[in-house]
Amino acid sequence: MNTPIQTESATGALFGNLFAAYDDASFKFSVDLFERRFRDGGFDVSWFKDKKCLDAGCGGGRYSIAMAHLGASAVDGIDLSELGIADAKRRANDLGAAHVNFQVGSVAALPYADSTFDCVIASGVLMHTTDPVKVLSELCRVIKPGGILYMLVYATEGLRWPLVQMLRPIAQYIGFETIDAAVAKAGMLAPRRRTYLDDLFVPCIDFYTWQCLEGMLKANGLENATRWTRGRLDQEETLGTYVKDLSGFLEVFQAVPGDAARTAAAICQSVGDHATRIATDVSAGRLSEADGRTQAIGQGHHRFTASKA
Ligand SMILES: C[S@@+](CC[C@H](N)C(=O)[O-])C[C@H]1O[C@@H](n2cnc3c(N)ncnc32)[C@H](O)[C@@H]1O
Image 1 (cartoon, rainbow, N blue to C red):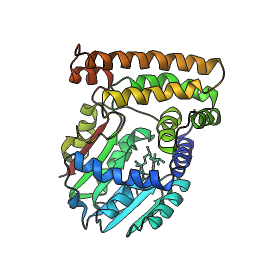
Image 2: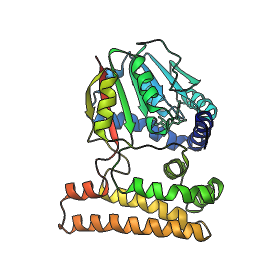
Image 3: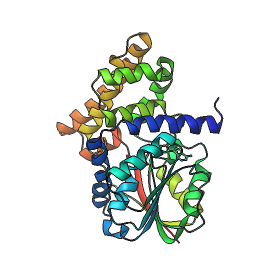
Image 4: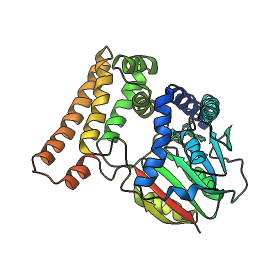
């Protein structure tokens, strides 16, 4: 059993490795995704102008840079990963993002005074932390009254997460290097590599119901929690993209030699077949699109904003 410090160190090292592998074009694409996603989510992105923003768990800094490009007066990015922060500094410089400051640190002990930021974002972070209650209270502490929090948090439903839970111990047994080599053999570029290796190897992975998140936000003085149902622009966009994403796990394990990988591939095949059946039933009109989504994807990721009273 790892200590929280060992877990944090392994988490930082994993994400530093995964984000640093993005080439310039795919990194820029993922910077631009921020604006597209916020617009599609119904958020007026001109709001960012002259705002002081924090990107908590900033990884390679793509969303810090996006907020700077949208006119934020200052952006702080903080992450556990030394490699991630070094990479973020270089990327911000290359992309001419002004007033961005990156530092290594933990979102469970933020080095900022209370009520510092107009906006705090923590995208894909909470569920990978060892003390999410402390983390959420830290994020809320540094938001100014009237300021906003944006988060992406994994939800409990859908076929992908039970699949990931079944695959994780097998992936651990096979080992990161072997699976990474299989990802390369399957021809997956850095963004897809991150999707699969993140979920298979991140030390801490938790799932939240919306009710649980709402309760946690309220307990920290946040209100108007609004869950976005549009602007997914990810594997949950359609049933087709979801099925394709699931099939990536099969591709990976088929490229690994040995019995353990064969077992993993059989699990992937059976979950993938189930998802395909749902998609086929929708295409054939035997199931409504909404019911098909519910059965395969569930509610989907929680992407939401909330404001501090
Ligand atoms: C899925 S990545 C998301 C990165 C970034 N938000 C993005 O969307 O590009 C999760 C990030 O959270 C960071 N992280 C996890 N726990 C953390 C903690 N306690 N303090 C700071 N960063 C943390 C990881 O190092 C990683 O870069």
